[in-house]
Amino acid sequence: MYGVTAGIAYRRQLAEICRRFRVPLRTVAIIPQELVARGITVLALDFDGVLAPHGAAAPLPEVLAWLKSCALVLGEERIFILSNRPDPLRADYFRREFPGIGFIAGVRKKPYPDGLLRIMELSGAAPKELLLLDDRLFTGVLATCLAGTGVAYITAPYISLTSRPVMEGFFMLLRLAERRFIALSDLLP
Ligand SMILES: [Mg+2]
Image: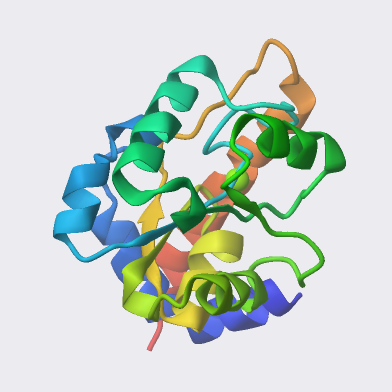
């Protein structure tokens, strides 16, 4: 419910972000060196859709290679996982494979800005130095509006219709619905 009321309050900003990310964006198309050139020093990464399809325990192989290059450029300790499903299997995975990457848990879920604020506190980064990669308008993207951080709206998320058809179908509809909702509400005075 908070997502809807805050989403309406921030509809102009969300509509602007939708226009800015009109071309489908995939996670691995983001080049860490370009982020650094733009003044980004900290990455916050959503998990579902951004690192892997919904419900996966670990990032996809192509994302792993990308994550390693981000870690080389920024440093592992400048990367954080901020998922609304901070499940222990995923936390274990990162502790084992990327011990420097922070795994945020125990905060109110996005769109509350709490996770992003926690990351700024842990890293000492200013809002403009922090970039969240997220595939959901009314959760992650909205949280960046509330926290004043940068956002990369992943409009070509990872989806596996063969392994989780119902769940993925539901999230495909949800992503479409939230974009339509913002496009329509932006037309209102
Ligand atoms: Mg997601």
